[in-house]
Image (cartoon, rainbow, N blue to C red; front, side, top):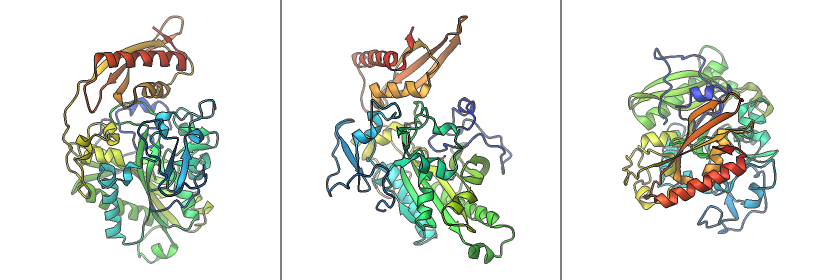
Length: 450
Ligand code: PHE
């Protein structure tokens, strides 16, 4: 979660963050009597836009075959070659992309038809194909390296918004980021003349570690433009905005029923810089309210700047992992990245909602570490260091103690849960990991271990 208000983070800590970068705690609940629960579930085309770091397109068949994180020195997305050295720059203080993140670029999990994310994407496509035959243009291969302008300025994210910070976003350099949402493509697609589109892709956010949060996840963006002919001919009372909002809600309620069946739904008012009004759609599912997506009527300024004065539009964005975790009963977000046959073989094309059967639950191992923090310390930085050492063997990093002594020094104690999704870890292996984590935390974060 990238709240506009910093303190909202811990209050909303229990909520799934794999979607809403820009929302804040809802101002009001528009259509429900119930208080908003904080415990709601935690759970193609060729690249039109030149990739920001465009180098010569790789020849056909040049897609790197990777075997391990750092093994590939270049990958390809939508015909654009992305070299490691262009993304990971250890000596450049304006760069904060580690190898663990580079290793995810180009994997394109949403392109795999037998993967839960691909199955979900295709099911959403089916809904749009059935109800709006041929209208929505689909993009799922747009380069995740975008300019700061695309990611933030073009969608009116304020200059002081927390999501722009190095703590929250992966910067390749001062002008280039790994997109933190698929909304980064709205403006250019509009300028290219598109009026109906879906954009699916991997998005990147620096974040803390637990079973529903991973620094790379997948979103789908939907966007639809209306011209004056649409609303004037509708016979509907009210403004163009009301027309767009009504169409948005009807379309997304239909989508939610397509995915979840006949569920109870409610609309919650919220805030995004690029839409006004803005909403979240929630459904009542498995005894809890689940946030399905964020959406709203597009800010007029975005349309005006991109050649659509006198039009109105709606947009939505949804996190594929959070929905797939519920639909397929997937208990840990790391599983989406697993190549273990016992995971991958359980899913097949076109079969939404097949329940995942855990192949076995390996025990977690907990290790605590305490240190005096300094002014620069952030939990996201800690998590990055831990992940850099332990990779996907780390399941959770949790603050369990926090105090300030009389001299004003603050101590944090974190409990790290190590657990493999695929095998038992040995004591020796975990002790080694923990030792390396402690050394790395000490040297990289300059904190004083206790
Ligand atoms: N980009 C928003 C996010 O990542 C989601 C969104 C998309 C909201 C489009 C409204 C409209 O949180």
